Amino acid sequence: MTAVDAGRPPAPAEAEPARRRAPSRRRAGPAGYLFVSGYAVLLLAFGVFPTVYAVYLAFTNDRGQFTGPNQFVKVVQDYRFGPSFANIAIYLAMWLFLVVVLTVLVAVLLRSGVRPGLSAVLRFAYYIPGALAGVAGVLVWLFLLNPTVSPVGPLLRWFGFETFSQVIAPADLPVIFVLIAFWTGAGGWIVVMYGALNNIPDEVLEAAKIDGAGMWQSAWHIQIPMIRKWIAYMAILAFAGGTQLFVEPQLLRTASLGRIDPTWSPNQLAYVYAFQHGDFNGAAAISLVLLVLGLLCAGLLVTRSGLFKTEDK
Amino acid sequence: MTNPSSRTGAAARLASTSVVVLILGALFIFFVLPAVWLVLAPSKTTSELVQDFPLSFGSFDQIGAAWSHLVSFQDGVLFRWLANSAIYSLGSLVLTLAVSVPAGYALALTEFRGRRLLLAVTLVVMIMPSATLVLPIFLELNLLGLIGTMWSIILPFSFYPFGVYLVYIYFASTLPRDLLAAARIDGCTEWQVFRRIAMPLARPVIGLVAFFSFVGNWNNFFLPYLVLPNTEQFPIQVGLNQLLGSTPSFNPVAGAGLNITSSELSLAIIIAILPVLVLFLFSQRTLVSGMLAGSTKE
Image 1 (cartoon, rainbow over the protein chains, first blue to last red):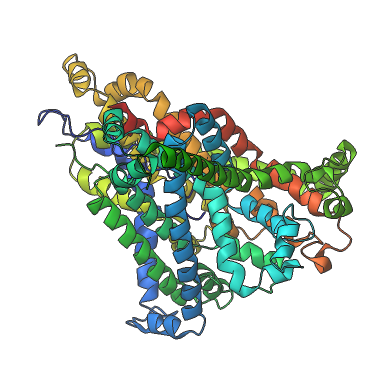
Image 2: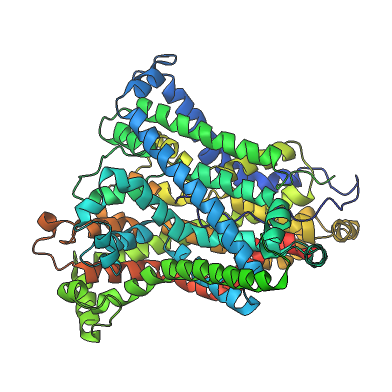
């Protein structure tokens, strides 16, 4: 659910630069409407309508009266609001740093530091935990972080953790969530970054080599700058996904008999508003804050990155 | 960084190689060790899990015992959960394909008013994390009184803008317009053009959309967790959460008297991800090439 959101690889985006001929290529008419009608209905029902409805709820109260910004004021003043966003901010800072630095580094190494066969095997091994995205991955890490059963128990003890409840102390949670997200998500990104590097024409790298650039110099001065669009793409998606953390803290709470803050992440706070307080208006207000964050990221990517083609002139 | 003079050059190369080995090796252990541990865990009893070497194999008998405990948990509710997951994922997959293939085709190859707007909205929604809309969708379903029905999962799952975008890109880059124009001149209706020319060519992208949609929906937790109040209706992911709450190593109180221990739980995890894992193993090559199809082609 976090980060890579497994099923969302940066599509075949960079694809083909416009190579189509101008007008007359399309047929106008009602057929197009028919073809998109089913999808358009779903888009309205589960993309547009929920958004509009959330906006409506966030600006009204439970009797449907317009309340202006009051719902937002209420949730922002909630003593749990600040901490939940602070938690996410700490998590995001670590997660972004780790995912950007490590995936790019590893992709570079896989591209030019090892033999192609080994590189393929490693990419596959890194990628496989992606199949455990979501609940399964979290559960695996619950075991790994439990010093009594963990295969790295000695390591945990060496860090001074004797019991599971010591491991899941509040201050450690962001690190734990970063580990889980990295374990299930980084492999997919490594594959993507590797693919982007693979796209750099061999002549460019040859030329660099002839000019005396070593592996690291070539990586730093040539390869990384050439894939920076993809790095930006990954960073923005990892950020947007990270703001949505829900499964991880929620499951950890189940596993710890509720010792973990039930409103650790903003999504959990919205959940508590909706399901424990029955306050859908407040829940909608929090959701909107997150929605706007997601929209900003998406808008930024679509308009600025040049990775998505919307027109084919 | 590297000095061109040969002696330091050799030393630098050695240092550089060791850095490569160290980083890639450490990551290999990080990614693979938990998976290996997970596969071995159901073969060991709770005390073996604690005392034995973590990567040792216990016994097949224990796997059998774990299996029968798991199966008898709440009268075999495990199978119910797996069946639910299959119904939700496959049902929405069928709907997703039925709407997104024609939609992607029309966006790429036909002209109609609002096409660009539809495409732009699709892109934005596709990039937004799917979790963003879950709570608003819950509120909507609640308004419509759909909470607790199968459709409260299948319908939202089948809205899959990323699939539409994949089909769009695929048709826009592989299907020559001249071919369609020729077919139209020969008197094909728009439907025939789609059915006879576009559809047969779409097989690779259908596979890709199907994979991502199925994997995403099978692993989805947030939406079903919110909208399904009834244990009998849980998909396996939400079921795992319930199993977790019944495992004494994590929940001594609730777990007492139940036969769900760490080895049963780890067996359940393996069973839960099996369909996705099989897909991962068998479609890796296609997938990776599919993910990068656009960018490697030219």
